[in-house]
Length: 180
Image (cartoon, rainbow, N blue to C red):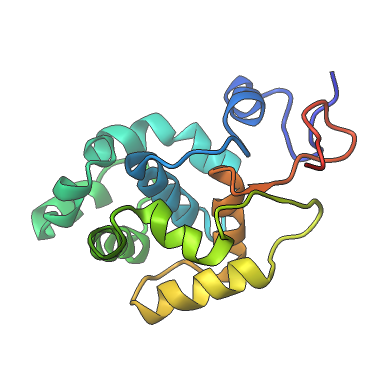
């Protein structure tokens, strides 16, 4: 069975993520927050590296409970910086807490984070392959940065939109490919 070229077939976690999760449409706010945090930690790294640490991130970030993350203080930041199971980058850790607070504000403003994303997507799935940014990721990135989020450049947001299924990007030679 052929898969996308990026999928490391020697990593069962990556294969399972590719087969059962990547580009699968999801609108649950907890999941949307988890993927936003994980994708922001990816900056400068591979998503495979982040995925290998996902369970550790889930434990460290209280299963991506938005209210808990928004209340993280310096003690929790220190605990995260000492956690060898996650990426211990102080800027990314602080950004994840800041981004969660902005995510919460957006959720309160729109009723859900997905409702916010629909303002950009018109509630449509986009089918495209072999690109790493688009006008859509540019617009969302620009708005999130304007709202104060960090580590949400257009490439990270494009990857995020793929991870939550708004952009469907399986390679043309992949068994999961479809064009609509």
